[in-house]
Amino acid sequence: MAMAGTVLIVDDNAGFRSFAGALLHRQGFEVVGEAGDGEAGLEAARRLRPDVVLLDVQLPGIDGFEVARRLRKDDGVTKVVLISARDRRDFGAAVDDCGALAFLSKDEVSGPALEVALAGAGTRA
Amino acid sequence: VTTAREIEEHQRQLDETQAIAHIGSWSWDRATDRVTFSDELYRIYGLEPQSVHVDLETYLGMIVEEDRQAMREAVARCAREGEAFLVTHRIVHPDGTTRWIEGRGRAFGAGRELRRMVGTCNDVTERQRYEDELRATLAEVRASRARIVDAADAERRRVERDLHDGAQQRLVTLSMSLQLARLSAPEGSELGPMLDAAAAELKLRSRSSAISRTGSTPPCSATAGWRLRSSRSRCARRSPSACPARAAGCPRPSRSRPTTSWPSR
Image (cartoon, rainbow over all chains, first blue to last red; front, side):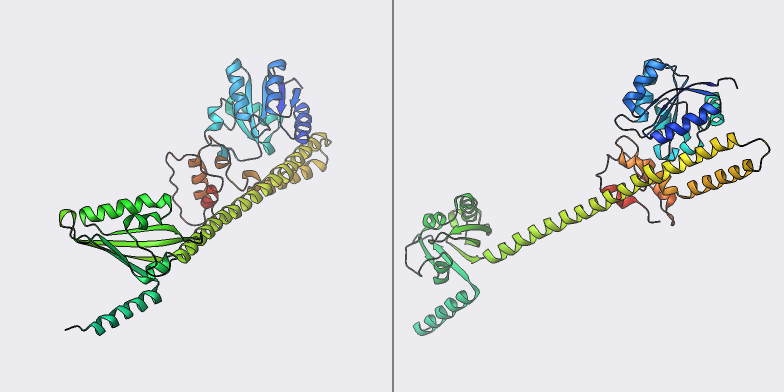
């Protein structure tokens, strides 16, 4: 299977990072790194330059929205897909305001879902 | 014609009435510039009846310093403008104990026409003490109510965190491991449809446990900057009865405030 792109997973739950990494790998993505909090996520994104950052909203330290804003300020190129176990509506306009490409519920995270999101036809409403 | 005996009888009745009611009286006559205290007023001030001579300055001197100026001004205004007064003030007895006194006064005539001033004093120390106790109790009740609300709030946040970090994360990783297993299932085996069914069932369960997806408090109110408007309208949508939600330009509410807008499930 052709590689669909490189992914950085930023989530404070190690179990989620591990399963999501394995699943995305099986579905054609190359997982280039993982981070457990916002600061480490920013650092890894700047260093690894992944095609997409799979970014949890609620993180220790700076939250996902702030990480997305800073990444957009950096170069405006890195694609961010926000993920959360919460409902998207709980976050109101913050999802759009931070410049993320899409929002995925954590239980919807999969290779195909990520590809749809990256194609711009994701759950962005 | 009132006889001396009748006057004496009236005076006796007045003294007894004052003693029973614990109200003392004073009067000042401009023509003679004389101040008189009733027996009960001496007792209220902790003195033997008619034991010392009193005038305005000795009267003011018995009042504690912090309250003296208010009484001085009230008496002056009463004399100047004929305005009756009520000043609650503290006095110190010769034995050093402090008492709360309610002092009332009024004038006959005013300014140049002033002829007499009269007044009463009654000891309200007990009432003051009850009021202080009541205020302290009320403050304690308010603080305790706030503590209860905070404790319930903290408990709800703890349950939410447990659900979010525990149950919900496990459901998510379980869903992913099912997807991984599905990818590993041999093409055409009956394992594939079984894993699909399990994944679908899990999705259903996950969605029905809405509380673990959304948390038991709306995140909008838990984090500064996220809109209260969103929180309120979500509450309204979840409410079983019709519930219009309006919030315009609200600042971030206190931690205990969002509780009041949370609909019962």
